[in-house]
Image (cartoon, rainbow, N blue to C red; front, side):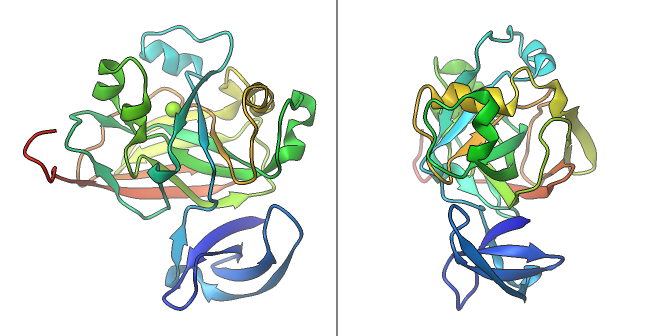
Length: 260
Ligand code: MG
């Protein structure tokens, strides 16, 4: 099932489920019991929102050997974690806004995990019981600021730097799915999730040994090789086999201040 969040001029933000090119509303939340109503809204006639509202977005760095190599670093022997703020979330179709503080903003195509229920000290073998489903994320990164700062909060944390969507696929096997990223017509990234250093299950076990995962929390599982620069006017399309496509235009902005 595909779970989506949307709003219209008359309807406040809410969850729905997708049937072909239609959305049906649901009664309840995807984190508990819910009932599906008949699909009645055209996908093209609603505003699609990021598919969940997380308390936190936890990311894994360098989880593909070839990306670690192109970054000139070693793969860690435990997952390397960092956070993106929930304020960085946008949905499919929303613009990625290039901040005036950075000259090098890059895309990172990633598989996203959405947590279903509170999770702490979860064993890898039981991790999938805590997963609502999977989505597509772009871990947009101001590479020059990431390198300049000793940690990654600024380089990873700008508003619009976490496109997520278009929906949550609840029936998805993360063991061997193809991830591709196109910028306009150019293929930039292509890899299978089977090439991850740490599996989704191992990542959930590791994170839940550090912090309590809450319903709606999002885990970004790392990007394969091929990250590259985005400039104003580009369109980024990330596709994951079995989920769908996340598509975002890139726009420039200028600072409201003379110098930042
Ligand atoms: Mg990343």
